Figure 1 (cartoon, rainbow, N blue to C red):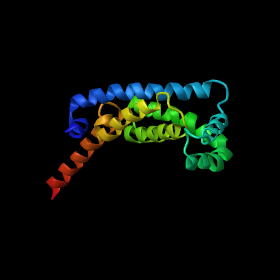
Figure 2 (figure 1 turned 90 degrees about the vertical axis):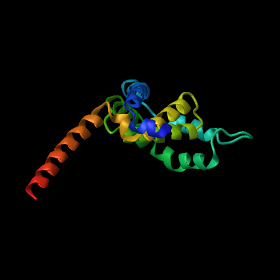
Figure 3 (figure 1 turned 90 degrees about the horizontal axis):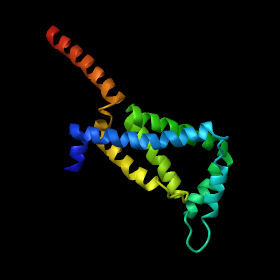
Figure 4 (figure 1 turned 135 degrees about the horizontal axis):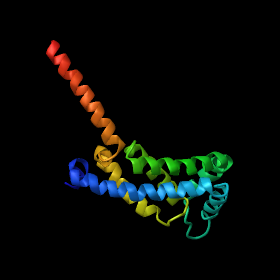
Length: 168
């Protein structure tokens, strides 16, 4: 019932628009802060996450710390670039409503990565809210670039189908 509402109802599209703006602004502001501010280096964050994997109550699971230590940390420059520009692209995608589901998916991936690395802050909230956007599917981008593009594609294809049916 709720999923059907999120996926089909026009009122839900307005609620999702508000969610897109809120989440998109959070991502965009974080990304711009990293790009415009002093050079962003994720290696300090990564070392802190790896350090949280030890002790009697570790905040980071051992398997995730191993992944960070042996794959991500040696490629910290690449991941620093991916994080800052990924945040900007996710923010723009959600705000503009372009490639909305893709932006939501990658936002969820980044939030899960931050959560697994021991950072709580607003990540759980953004993760849950972004899940609503992803579940809503096409309706999440109805008011935005996705809606505009798909409307144009649908009209174009319906005219072609009409012409083909007349010629047959």
